[in-house]
Structures are given as structure tokens and as C-alpha cells.
Amino acid sequence: MSYEDEVDELEEIKRRKLAEYQRRLEAEKEAAARKAEEEALRQELLRRILTPEARARLTNLKLVKPELVETLEVQLIQLAQTGRVKLPIDDETLKEILAQLSSTRRDIRVKFSF
Image (tube, rainbow, N blue to C red; front, side, top):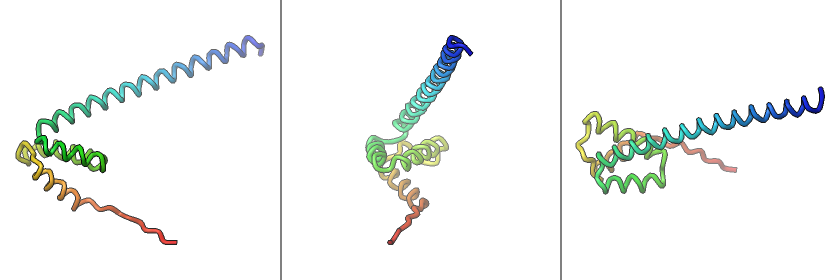
């Protein structure tokens, strides 16, 4: 294999890698745009079904337990869509829902002693 053949082969590898990176980047951009669109829709739905006080509580809770709030947001939207809760959901109702959710959720803690 000559030097020029090796250079051509390296250039071809570079082109393929670049094309692969561009496809990945495009796929990541599309996924990020889709996720942002879903989040905007979720926030709009929550704005409609929660009072400002309840939204503030949810925002504060999101700082501490983001995974819990994500689950709670989905449940709140489902409750509102099925008509199983009176709209708008006020702070007291949100507290009750949180209490019910917390009572059904169990944290497993492992304690190590050496």
C-alpha cells in the first residue's frame, strides 16, 4: 500500500467519523427539542390546573426532590384530565395529594456499621 493510498484511507475514515458525529449531533438536537416541547406543554397544563400557591409549592419541592415532582406532575395532569379532582388544584389539595403519595412510597435505607 502506497503512502497516498494510506492518506486516502485515513481521509475516508475521517469523513465517515465526521458524518457519524453529525448524525449523532442532529439526533441529540431533535431529542432535546422534543423534550423541551414536552416540558413546555407540561408546564402550560400545570399553569391551567394549579393555583399560583400550588405551583409555587411544586417549584420549591422540585428543588429538593425533582424525581418526585416529575411523577407528581404526571399524576396531577392525569387527575385533571380524568376529572377526579376539582380544578383548579389549590395548595391544600396539593398537600393532600403529596401526603397520599408519600404514604405509598417507601424509601429503603441501608445502614452500614464498621
